[in-house]
Length: 623
Image 1 (cartoon, rainbow, N blue to C red):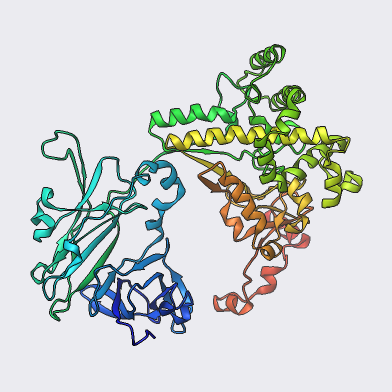
Image 2: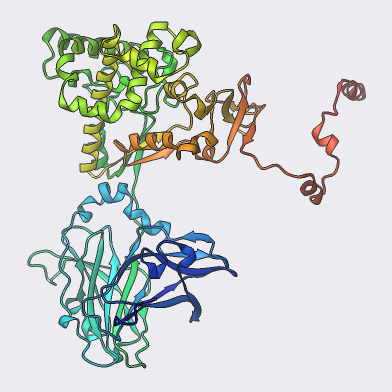
């Protein structure tokens, strides 16, 4: 309860929202009056039919200077959450001019998933980054927020417009004198408040309601006649507001009108494997720095997105079949195939430069020679590494990279060394290194180890891959092109991840797909399935780290076989095809359910009954 010794103001909430029978709407917020984010203690709203809308409303008394964050929730009769609105928490701030006895009414619209799309990084940080970089303006003064006559109302208009072009302003028009009486040049100009939100306020009298109004975007040009050169009025019918002014009470009404109603934004993109992004500078295969040329092409073609196939290291067997991009050796390490060796140093001697030039000619083929490209790049990179390893490994930039990535970088480098030393990725052949432990890892990669130079070479390769992909990714962002990655559903059975975290995988199983129209035998992909129960114990830390790593380079990513995150076709380890699998998790059907659908002969449905004897009888009948 509010302290009775303090003067209080009333804050009212109003939101139109359709619910089903037994559902209710409530507000929960950061302040104690709104439940302190405990939905059970939130403010329950009351429904009423207003025209064709179901409107929920409620109010609370608040002390001067009150502020809180809040959101709307749909709950059942016991206040269990059924769903909640998407997007950022709303902010409640009392206007400076709100006096004792006056009210603040917040008229909101439910924030849906589609409303939140423009706030995703692909749009906010890339495609429309110019719009989001606008400087905030000071809102226009409204006669010092004074309500001069009984029943007058201060209306604050708020609209979100994330796609606004530079040099464009937003106006609100209406029949009221304060809204220009439908004259654009006299309309109410909104000020930019940050986060794509535009707002302005004006005083309305009793005779101004009900009020119809649309929002209008105006683009300016010097010496234009009329004073703008482009006008875009929002789509659909005019918005409408009615305020009960019969009580004679004055107050503030904040209209949060959601997104500007514009024609849906449309964009196009291109999907391509990284190895196909060829240029005259590469060594037989597309390289990360070639992405800059692809971005330039996308801009000229009007594309907003470039999607790549997976780019993680897949060199499990060091053979040509490692070219399959969905079988990851590591979900964190980048593939050395996409390294531009010519760019890893500014001091490459002439003999190595000549070797690069000759290799460029030899490897310039119609098809990628996977093994030759890998061998050539690693050979040249080792020669450069030998010359500058002390300088690079002791540099500040490398030390920062190593510090941020050592959790996966150390075991990755050790795995690559052991794979090459034992000439296999099959860990059962690695002796005492078959089972991973941090103690054995630290001894293996120690600077005092005989193998440190080999291990540190893989640090060096990943460092330069990171630099080159980061350069390409930043170039794409500046050009307004979204770089989209691909998240494979599985990892190779003989991978760094299954070596370090065997408890996170069901190593005696395999992933695949059931028989279908495309393959009567189903599919067996060979990847172990995930142990989701074990992963949940640390709040899916492995997945969080994996997505965070991808987020360093990509603004968006495709999730491969997303259904597999909810159920997967799981096969026993010995299976060759996809026939012997089952869905995991699966929902069993009870005998009662089957019987209710008219199925009763369970022996015939669950046990083979066409035996050899029956086949012979059928064969004789055919003869």
